[in-house]
Length: 265
Image (tube, rainbow, N blue to C red):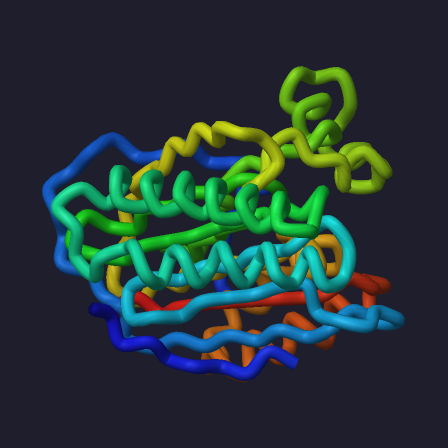
């Protein structure tokens, strides 16, 4: 059972990669672990509840952004992180299989709850497990995972939205996708369909890297270039999370904003 860390909800040359980076080829299991972690979650302006949930439990981090309206969205996102906390072992022999099984079970749990009087509820999820094999990431929806590695920012996940799909096919530009109202229409999410296929990917990581998970409330207000500059500053993780939330607010994000981050040692 993992130790759960509880959080309350309420220069130098560098490279920025704006697009999704696929997983690295399999390599020998390198000994990496979490040496520090932090999280922050704030309610969106004008919202009655915060529909985001997060998890920072030893080597397991997750962010979930509920959909379906206030109480339903909050319940869905909480079901997702609670299921991950309960089912993902601390050091599984097969991290990809462990994350996939937990997310698929979360999908069933959210659908069962929707039948129980909360029709239309669902949630995004991005989850990461840090261990001997590097960083294994699973996602559904538009919550993202980033890795700061060798003075470069890599986005480890692709958004499951209509806008992102159009950009990937070359029908619109990445800049247009960022501004498009279609960015909020999701193609995949937890609890939306009876079956949810999850394909986690494992990425190489080294001591000194920073893993950052976030809901769309962050990246809606903070672009990848700005995020890279903040990560390059090397500030302690609690200050980094607070700074990013403030920047997102200043740049017009009105959604709930949630960040979970870890320094890899």
